[in-house]
Image (cartoon, rainbow, N blue to C red):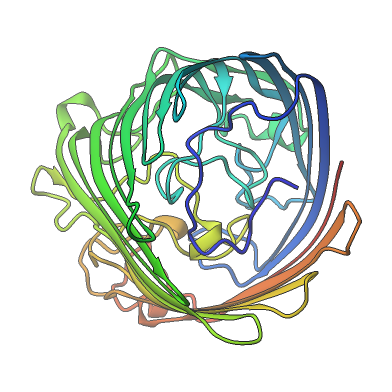
Length: 445
């Protein structure tokens, strides 16, 4: 299957390029998952929630000598939800062509290549924190546009201009989502996403230094209100590995204009200034063990009345590979968060992998939203302490088999933020800790 639930942040290519022999190629995979959540941290949620999900993908590709065509359809469905289950377009998107593209390669010299991709496409870049094809999530980010990439022995340069596909039916049409109705995703003029990046791989060491800039624009479309934004995000990432030790540092600064919420008017446009950073150090031990320390920090809005917005926008990034399972859980998000973490990854056999993680969750700004829970205490009296999150995963893929199986769970030991001290209607008391379990079966061809 094309998912990496236990990734430790290893580099990902900006976009898959045609490789291999000429001719026609086919691939398929199917994944089913059941999820259960008790005592949610969200403002509105059932006491006991559950959801069943399926995702089927079929890819057809033709590879010529220097060009190619690729078509991929993804069918994502969900059922068994309750009235206040967090069901959305990240769960259901039936029969959607997420890749329908033309690819062209030019060999410039012995160690340099230029490639062009045009059409519908999925995109991965670098750490996948700001731009990713989603893996654990049941639907994938997809875009319509052009992508140009130049690679040489030590460098990779990428440029793209796209219109993000807006998934249909949208989240406001909950009845259609519950029925898994088909609606072809559209690239609207109100949403644009572009970017450029430069990655340099040092020849004298196992190190890579990357710099990137992304532009994102979002505006209301007809009767569908959104939190308008016009943002530029510039960042850099360093990875280094020597023997058993690996280090990663990434930081990005974000500026522009944004609205505080969906119902804000253009008269309420805010000056946007935000940033995020990630630090990671890991070490490979004997017997297939990897131990790592990490710290994630993404700013939140300090004062809801100062005409500025410091809440970091995570753009089109993924989170489950690093911050814990999403689905109907998803207690951590790269927005208004401070979070150190300890992780142990154990490759017990060639077929089995275990992950144990402990993460401390707190708000960067006590007066801003706890975004995953849609909660807010504008007075700040509730404090910052979200709690401590435990995560456990087991993944098994039998040898010479297209099948895989995974069990996982998370436990949020709720902190003082949920005590109801601020007496806020948007942050009432929620004392019971959250418990999440899932089981997942996959097959690929």
